[in-house]
Structures are given as structure tokens and as C-alpha cells.
Image (cartoon, rainbow, N blue to C red; front, side, top):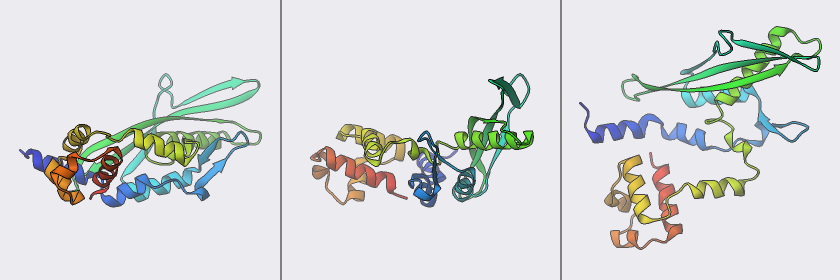
Length: 213
């Protein structure tokens, strides 16, 4: 049975530095589209490309029989036909050394599409499926487009960071298996300097902890 250190090493290497970099990159302006009502979205081609680059094609997406055993829900409103689907995105996470599947991440999403004039019904289903995939992939791709501005995003990220020494040490151990000595070595400071840090210093060191390989 693997000891605690081995388990921590596997957890830290599930997401490679390259994958982490891609996951935390802001959505580029060229990939964002804006509707007439101001809603910002990304095209499904961008989502598929990012999934392939981040997870190495080791994912799939399928429609689920969510609607009383059917994969498609058809509704009518004000003379307009709408199709709705529910899909599941499955991402396989592998041990980087053995390539054995350690776990899978499953996210569901619901998408819909009005059947516009001269649109084939099958095309409406494909559009709804694409919408569902984008919703399911939202935790990984393009989530930052829902923030009004970068200042709001930065404020949220800062609010989720530890602001006291006790909180930082607790989270560093539980999330990264790091002790106070490990943190001092990473930051190249003494323990006396560590325990004298103010809130800004704690946040800066936490960012370094998150960015380590």
C-alpha cells in the first residue's frame, strides 16, 4: 500500500504544470463572442480545441436519456419549436508514470436550440449538443468570461487565498503536503520571517505554492 508521501506525490502530479498553465490562462479576446444582449460566450470549436490540448484527447461527451428515457426534449412556445438535451463530459485522469486511469471527472450540462426557419431538425440537435458541451466544460474552459472585469476576478481569487499563517500552514499541508520548513525553503526565508509575514506576504507565498510543479 502506498504511503502518504506517495499519495501526495501522485496528487500533485495528476495535473502537470503544462495543464495547470492552460487551465488558468484567461480566455483570449479572439475566442469571445458577444450577443446583441451583451452575453459573452465562446464557440464550441474553441472548447473542443482546449479540451484536446489540456487533456490529450482523453475525454468524451455523450447525450444522456435525461428526459423520461429520451435524449431530446421538444417543446413549443409562441409557435417556436425548441430542442433541449443533457450531455455528460467525461475526462479520464491518469497516473503520469503508468498511464493507469486514477479517476474520472464527470460534468453534465444542458443545452438548447430553437429550430429556426429553414433549419434542419438534426442541425438544431447538434447546436443544442454543442451548447451542452460548453456548459459541461465551463469549470475548465472560458469560466472567466462571466466576470465583469479583471479587477472583480482578482478580488475573488484573493478572497479564496489564505490570509493568516495558521490558515496557510493548514492548507499547505492538506492540499500540497508541505510543512512550514518546506514553505521556508520554497520562499527562501527563515521560520522567523515566515511567522512575521503580513497578509500581502502570505498571499504572495501562497501564489508561489500554487505555481510549484
